[in-house]
Image (cartoon, rainbow, N blue to C red):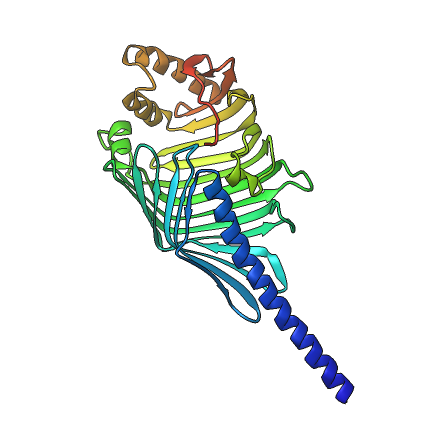
Length: 333
């Protein structure tokens, strides 16, 4: 019995020592990471970094955290940031953002507030911390810009998961409820109030391949860029208008997409009016485009629904036979 008791005490002492050793590794590691960023010209400061949660968790909290990347001009100011992991599974990390924080760009400052903004991250063991999976939850998210606009989101969920053992490919799903775009955007897209102020539903399922893994270098060095996109499903519901899309794109080193996305647009006349308001469709061409779209709708068997490809080629995009102009570049800053 005494030997058993001695063994239990030794194991307990080892476990306690291991917890405190790993807690020191996490605290010192974050401090070292901030110091490395400062050496590269970043603003990277925290008033305090500490790890608690003994004995079953590691709760690492950074307070008054300030980060600014000189290469992109992007800055982040958080009163606190918490990383939590269980003692027995330190590579499963929950990151919790505060109810209020600030994002700044060279053009504006954005105040972010939310009832919930956290992510459960599963990462590879080792120093690279390659992302295996991320589950992100958003609740009552609101953005307020120094440029005078605001935008809100009732709720949203996103899941990003590595596709098998391929470190460059991720499967992604996203769903939001009641997205209210910034008022200037609404005023431009729908000045007559044809559509409700909220996009009730937005759902996306896609698989993206990148030119490098999503790991710690994605923050320290540069963001991975998309090389291929397989959009298995997109659904957007905005009042009477419904948009569905699926297809594949290849993306070159300059972010120019090539490929085809098949689009189904229900109540397309409302969408055409929105595009007209946004200036996407030049006013002189509206009657011609409406006639072409009416013909496309006739092919689908319903005059309120269009099935047509959105084609990307040589840096330009067209919808069915209608050229829309230069294609947007898919670049992650």
